[in-house]
Length: 541
Image (cartoon, rainbow, N blue to C red; front, side, top):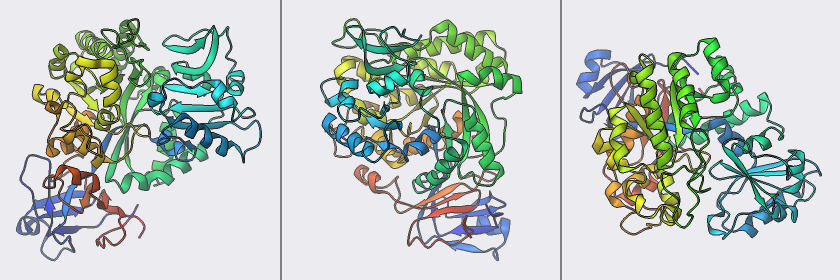
């Protein structure tokens, strides 16, 4: 990227998200905000002869931050078979047959995005065998926690009736034989067999995807996992080459903890473009797969309380070792049982590891939390890192399996009322990167077509300002970067976006149609919409 110039954005409505009233002008110097306020406030600092960008009344927001994304997985998935949006099993099988038709026999076929919730049953290897008997096929469910294999893939993975279930996972069986479904940690059996993308393919895929983020106003990502440390090396390589298009906070997988400790990695290590966030762990599965760990059985499934992928003592051991080395932990916990295990574990770590209570510990998803546990987030200084779009995508199956417990499902209002820190993200590629779709979900608790009427458990809605705060200042706080990004204040990075309407003023349905006109990172416009005609330093100039 070019060295950013000094210039002034003026005649704008600038929402700062630092507690101050909106401004009309902002000065950028060396990639940071030098002044903000009125024209006179800004010119007193940089001089009235500074080059000016007239935004003609447009609205400016801080650069948006996705607090939970799987970027490399997202980028690679763009190049593989996409099954999201296919409603029925026959539609999915038709797509698979078509995809396989121009590929040589024996070549692996991978894809993701299928959702069996409305199919009436789980899919099987036999379903895939009927359309792709000569290609090993691995298709990941939309939540990333279940893989669907055909017989050729099962054989290539060495999975048969004698293969034991791994700890924290399951090979679904019928009459003792694998059906073709792998759940939770059992997915590693498939991952070990599928040829991984090489370094060039990974990096090229990520570069190709930058614009997907920029056009949605994203300037920073908290990356929660591509299960190998080579992702950090990929990002570092792109950083060194000046090709890293977004700011990254990286959370390392459990398998790399010992190496990370040996290397002296600590939360916050890095620079403004790439830094270490901490350790990423998993305590359970998902609602869609009915593997989220619950305190009581799923409605209609008297014997099913989910599938914990790690027990409490193991979590305390890993999170404790990480904390002792200066690494915070972000832990996947969806069910109320998993959230309690996480909170209990963080309490144990805080009691035994000096300084751990001040770390930015996080629980990812928090999709259903027992009412008595909500206050513990603020009491224990644990950030609730949540994804609003999951609420509207999953509310029907949440009703089916969690019933009356849903009053504290996706409990954003309860979290904020308690004083807990709230950070929002997308969980892409599981859901869309579209932040304003997430804001709409948080504000309405309705789908894009207005279902359910009145909103699902509307008492848990938040305001547009609160939702945007969770995508900006709240997300920055979750990574310990509140003094660098997430708000528009003097000294902060000049990461900002220009949008075509004021999200704080429009009717809720209009949130879905807000367009980003320009995205700036460190004082450089990295993207502008066609016809936006915004002057100033550009990434490609």
